[in-house]
Image 1 (cartoon, rainbow, N blue to C red):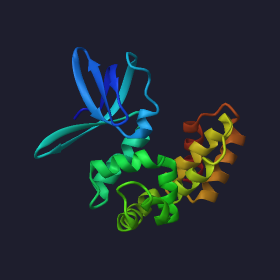
Image 2 (cartoon, one colour):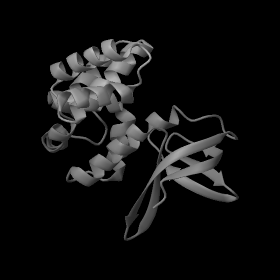
Image 3 (cartoon, rainbow, N blue to C red):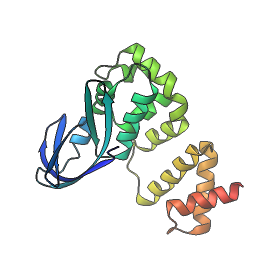
Image 4 (tube, rainbow, N blue to C red):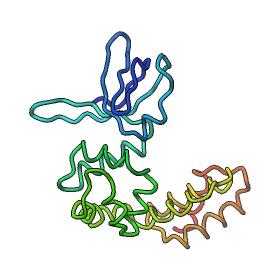
Length: 201
């Protein structure tokens, strides 16, 4: 499987890019969220990819962020009735953070306003992904409403990591704050998470 392309950006359109990798041109379809993050044509680029194989075509999809590709994979592999085209529409119409927040909150109205996503599809997304997004999605969406300092961002990342491991939001936050007080301001996210897990065992 092609995991990423690393080469020169030859052409960039809102829906697709062409990347020259050692003399071979690769075309990849992209969401608008990735288009906004592209460097100027002629620049070196690393594009994360997902190859989708169908009977009539092998199509490469590209993403500038791992979170975008992860959501794309989750949508096409988990939600019935959603293929690559609708998944790209979703990524083009809403940020990953806002999407996770909407799913966690059961906000069918916001999801149904995305091009290609009607009310029934939005309801199916909420039902089939809510457990996978969970409280971490709501916490992530809430924290994104205001700019975080580097220190707060580190705490936020550690809290999200713990919540993904099954911690409740309040417990995760208290545990991270306690770990930072013990380890000091220079502690990395990994240090904080390890200290919290060690304390919890």
